[in-house]
Length: 440
Image 1 (cartoon, rainbow, N blue to C red):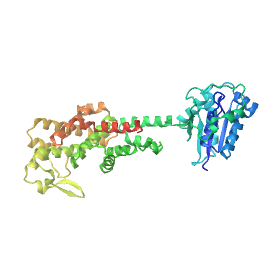
Image 2: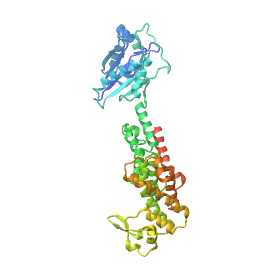
Image 3: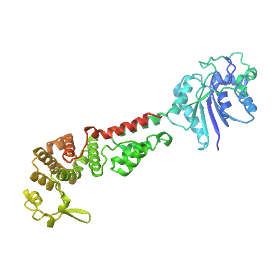
Image 4: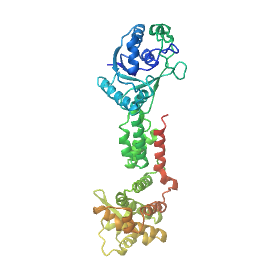
């Protein structure tokens, strides 16, 4: 309907200030915004003024005559309202009134709230409603001509003379209206929740909360949340696309497989930080197998794929390729029976132990294999509560110590991972949170 609707308490300097002969806030907002409907809220004292000389409707009618237009009025009379400092009363009463009048509004209508007229409790009540995001509206503040505090004088009020003397009736009047852009409390709370989710590395939850905020507000950081969520899901294609678009470098390890291993290890580290111990333990096997294989290739110059074949995209040891090789001797060194099936970490540990002279490396892979053997299968195949204490009990290592061992394997695998790279997610989080906190 494209209607402009004003809700306004009526205050002591309305409609025209007896001190300076200029518009009070109510009249000035009507002069500038030309509302189609005006809802006036009048307490006991204001109603006495209205009954004495009809000053409020008189000035609004004169303004419509001057602007050659019409306005509809509705007055909410509160003759019993003598205690005009009761914030709770105004908050509840204003909320009820505005809820009722917005029922008939559509998306093309504009609601204005006058936060300059009325008592401090009235102004505060409207500001709280705005801040809470209860209604889609514009809060209008009117600056006094003196740029200072208004004086409220009511004696010897001659509304007709004041109208004739009103300097704001000139064509070149100063527009003293200001739209107060208060970030609503609900949005502030939601953005705090988003930041908490980010700090907990829960990007999916952060994105879901962000979707409940108007896109005009989230546009500065929504893509970053999408990027973080994609990265956490190991969707590198999506994450890199957004990273390149926004010119944000979030991937310290760049090359193909090295990046894949590193990002997977980072993902494991996040599970540890979120205390998702069962998922952390279950996620060890893929990285252990891949890194052990990389260690064998980098340190021992043995390519495991040369001794394997594929069946339906599943890699298995190939008997014909292994027969007569030292690799087979290494694998079967402590196996009474070898069935030439899938490549497991225990096979790779045997190869490292057989060919390597590095005792630190041998101990490292042995420790990780024991972790996998002692608790990984338990977590993967049984319904149990995996706690930090259980991990220590079953493996002899804390979860952090296990993660440190994973990180150490990257050195043996020839992947150049600087110490600060492991803080990559925290660096990314800081970028996102800075965008949330800064509106420019």
